[in-house]
Length: 228
Image (cartoon, helix red, strand yellow):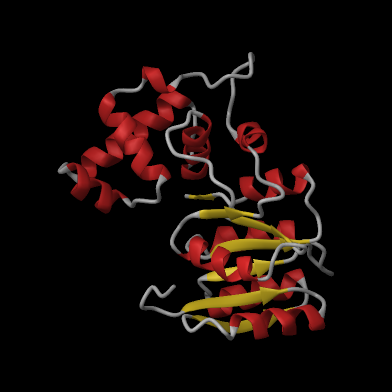
């Protein structure tokens, strides 16, 4: 796969032998370039700030600053950089916490090696990616804001036809400009529809809108999951 532009990657992993293996694996991808490495969480934040990579491959268990807090800080200072978690842990608590902080992908280290490059490509395109062994609708549903009865406060049936169209395009990774072009409406109108969706569903970020779309069957939940 080639996007016509090199995808820059920062590897944040405290074990040198693992970093070397990841680098060698990614060097076989013509459109991926590893531009930096970090062995601690603090170093990961500093290098991310300095290098501004497209994707940060982040371990959770790192000295000085764990991957969870490092992800929080990186997402705050570099909202356009995508964070891909690569960890030995597959516990739901880690997955939910990190996705709530803005991580867009989660791979367990037992995952097939070829999925790493695929995940990086997907994140670069603005889509989420999870290891097949950890993805399920239940885990996604737990991350969506629900009412006291455990259901979304508004159902898809309560949305207008146009809102449904916009919701699906958002969930498929389309930017406001692309949605406006596809639906032949103005960007300002797309923004209004997006705001109405978030108000109606009591959902206030794009990732949660996507999770809602999966739960409602508006977009398919395939394995491995590739969503915005």
